[in-house]
Amino acid sequence: MKLSEAKAQFISSWGAFGTHWGINRTMAQIHALLLISPDPLTQDDIMEELNISRGNVNMNTRELISWGLVDRVLLPGERKEFFTAEKDIWKVATQIIKERKKRELDPMLKLLAQLEDIEGDKKSKEAKQFIDTVSGIRNFGGQADKMLDVMIRADESWFLGSLLKFFK
Amino acid sequence: MKLSEAKAQFISSWGAFGTHWGINRTMAQIHALLLISPDPLTQDDIMEELNISRGNVNMNTRELISWGLVDRVLLPGERKEFFTAEKDIWKVATQIIKERKKRELDPMLKLLAQLEDIEGDKKSKEAKQFIDTVSGIRNFGGQADKMLDVMIRADESWFLGSLLKFFK
DNA sequence: ATTTATTTTCAAAAACTTTTGAAAATTCAA
DNA sequence: TTGAATTTTCAAAAGTTTTTGAAAATAAAT
Image 1 (cartoon, rainbow over the protein chains, first blue to last red):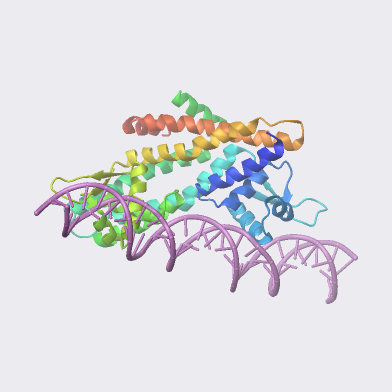
Image 2 (image 1 turned 90 degrees about the vertical axis):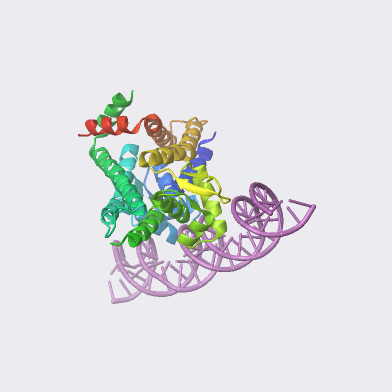
């Protein structure tokens, strides 16, 4: 496979996979493009490479920045802004986990805590199943939360090394 | 909070969270409803509880069944089909991980393997960064894949117990 | 074999999300 | 300042996904 072909494939697939991960297609494509670009790119570079509008690039680069996956860089002597992506995949994964935990898991656990104490008859079959389900999810979520906290704080080599030993 | 109110909240939030996890809103709501229902429900029960059409219930229950999260049950003496959800949250999580691994991670790793061997000059800055990025993702994904395999096979108590010791 | 209950299908409608592009705002240099 | 380059915004258009509901198919009872 030629490099140009492989690049196009990578960008398009990363985009498709992104949609399964709560990230929209274009955002994931821009991310993919920046991941394989050795040097920072401008808005215009991205527009041209991916054939998308200026507004679209602007909106999605900002979203990538808010996810902590992309940085704006200013090159000396250049008027335009450049964008560059974190290349270390462990850091990328850690950052995504951190954001999703904050945006999804933490609010869910907060809500479940509230739902657990309901008024009135807790002896009915209905109430029992409700409380059981909610507390089951809350427990599980709590464990996951702790585990992710450790992962986020962990150093890559320490973590992967230990995990491999653990699962060997 | 009253039970009815808490139930409605749970269903609606589970639906909202589902959308972040590659499951559509209604599918997640039906799942939530079944999770908190002590007894199996019919298509009509679900239609009524969630105010959605028959076609919608039919489509989404089938999808839930294909994810292995819901079962069709036939109650003796009843003409209609009933639906029931697996209530053990560890099994639910395991099942979701298994399906997503199959649907997303495995195909991605397969593709990345193909992209790694490109023709021609592998010394250019462009080619180097591309190969680096792809192999980085592939490595990371490979580790994740192994780890998830172990998790899927693991028994809850063994797994959570060990993990807690490990992360204490 | 016919009727009745139930489930499935799927085309069209509704709802939702993403993209565009041109105008407004901002930034920088002369 | 003023003007050119660049970035941002956002309403409307395009695209995508989900939902509906009625007709077709299937299954069960009489």
